[in-house]
Image (cartoon, rainbow, N blue to C red):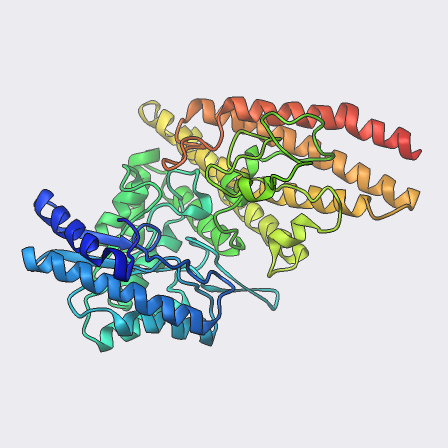
Amino acid sequence: MAPYRRRESEAGLRKLARDLATGFPEVRGWVLLQEGFTIDQRSPGVGGDAAAWKDWIRRWDDAVRIVAGEFHKIDPKLEVLPWSYNISSRPDPVHIELRREVIRQLPADVIPLLTWDRGMGLERDGEMGYSKDYSINEPGPAECTAAEIDEAHKRGFTVYSKADTLASWQFGTFPYLPIPYQWYERYRNLEKYGIQGTMESWTYGFKPSWVAEMRAWYSWSNAPPLDTLLSAIARREFGPGSEKLALNAWEHFSKAIRLVPDTGPLMGTNNAVAAPLFFEKPSQPRAMTVEHSWFDQRKRSGVYPGLNPYWPYTLSRVLLWPDFTNQVNAAERYANPFTLGVFNKYLGLAADEMEAGLAGYRQAALAAPASKQTGAFREVLLAEHLQRMMRSDRAVLEFEDLRFRLAHTSDKAEQTRILERMTEILKQEAVRVRESKETVRRDSRIGYQWEQDYFYTPLVLDKKLELIRDTLERQIPDYRRRKGV
């Protein structure tokens, strides 16, 4: 929907709502997502103060009231779902109160659609962080969401939630996540908190998979016990006798996801297998860039599609672009509010936990009857790729941290140590990229995200391999000669 301007276009907003209700009578409900249904006042953003947010919320809830009123004049049964996704969410009293304020001012004839997991508090080694977007490393709900649910129930609202239940933006280039024990905890909490309807997956929708099938069972009462259902799925996917191996693997995979520190809608576990590792700034851009003019390239790079001219194969926000002036450690900034050491520690632990499960998963696939081997093989490919996404995320961040530290030391022994470690990372990453390329050739679901087409294809992975080779064979040797190390 178009932005709402109280004095200028209230009449237009009312007309638009009436036109939608009459023009699409078969539609049974409308989602008023803040990203598309907004007001003529820029939201205060993450750093906005409470007073500014409260004013914005009042105006937005007023616009919801206008639209709901027009919809219900035409069809009182229409479900109107206001979804205030972009209102700041963090696990602290200020943000929790803001989310309650949204619910307090909603008209009584709507159904709040609440984001289940955004802003959820996370603790790693005594450091506190929070989920920056949709994620499944915690079953939820986020503290702000729990407060919204509480406020909504006080007002007698029916409550729906956007709650990923088979895939998550945390791994947004992955078709579904084989972590049934963690999904089950989310399903139980959705029921516990009285959620009466769900948007199952913003990223993929309902796609055929055994995880989506599992979700279907637990959307109804009297579903079978979890291990009974999973054993039946394992027999079907891998063949009789595979049950113990598959369930053990899924338990390890579920433990792994709980260790992952949230990365938000950025490079992280979405795109790290295809994200370049920059040792030096590329000498030639691959698209137009303006760096020495009145034109501010940085401002334009944030505008959709936001392509980085030096790596124009995906959106800038899913790359880790170094600060080549070496004033800011981009890896530390990415990991914030966690320290980089803790962030990377838990990525490594998660990947190790995946490997612990993969041993039995591979065994189950190898023992599968001929009629099931293709499907079983694809399941193993998915799990292996999930692990690579974690390890590549860690590699990109460690490599950038080392690049930054190399720029800030003149000690020859330290420079040598850093270069040796960077070389090791590049060689290990090259193996992962080649394995990823073979995987995406065999499974076109990998690397795809429907809002933005493919984050990466075999071509993109080839480009990353070219950069790795150039870094190993030219850039690092040139650096050694210049510095005498």
